[in-house]
Image (cartoon, rainbow, N blue to C red; front, top):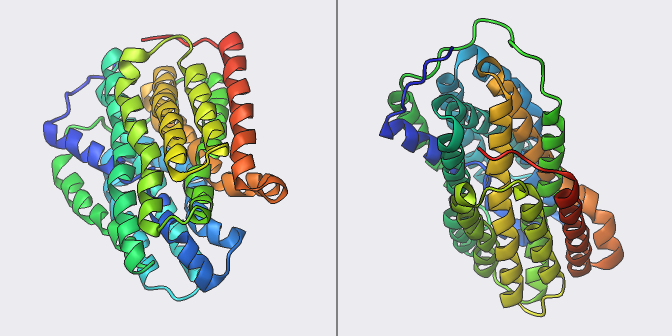
Length: 375
């Protein structure tokens, strides 16, 4: 039986501060995409400057999960935060697209370690309703990172598209706090996984991948839709941050709104928001759609995270939770690639409408076929 040690306030603060750096890691440069397109040429490769980070996260997360279980959460988190600062700020100095993509991949390796270590620490510290509550805080912190950093990135990008890369340097301060403030973590596992891999986890990974693939249309496609509405880089950053602002609300409400159909409701909200964007005549209506969709994502991520944490035994938590990280960020990476044919055929606005309708239908199907346990 695992003995639980209550985390200190400093330890909780370190984990939540680390979470703010994760979801928005790739999206920080979203307001810079149009200007980057003018320098390097518009197209899928420019969008990959944003999403290759997500591919690196997806690929590295399983290895990060193994390290979290075998070497401990603190070493993984501290090293990953330092790598995040180095890989992220390096983008300011590069002068060609291939090298920029390389630095973005390094950033992704770091985020995979951060997210896996944070999720494993929360699963170690709490159980039941307390775990669900803190997972809500984690997702709220992750979304709050977007609320803070994306508008700031927009302001910086209006001056020089390279300036937003300096925002990644905040991780250096959090790394120092993690090195000194994380204490009494669960000892690394010295044995092999003690239970079989829960097959239900595969379905959860698939749901996370699909929901994120759709949600990530916001940072990868909306800058171009908003530019066609004469939005400035600053406005683009503020509008996209709207989705993360409502994600904060959804995450904080998650412990109180948990039902047997939380996932279905969340997916339905995401679809409804995207449908609104698809028919939006102006920037204000686009923002309203983002707020609705972000609320759904704020609910679904902690819900899936909590379900996985309850399925995993202590010695395998890092590995199983890392699969959720991989699913989320593989969805981010695949988003522009999977949707490019639709966008080429219909345009960005109609692509939002089509995915909105499909997502609403998926939410309805989940309501009829999938029920989850409530803690």
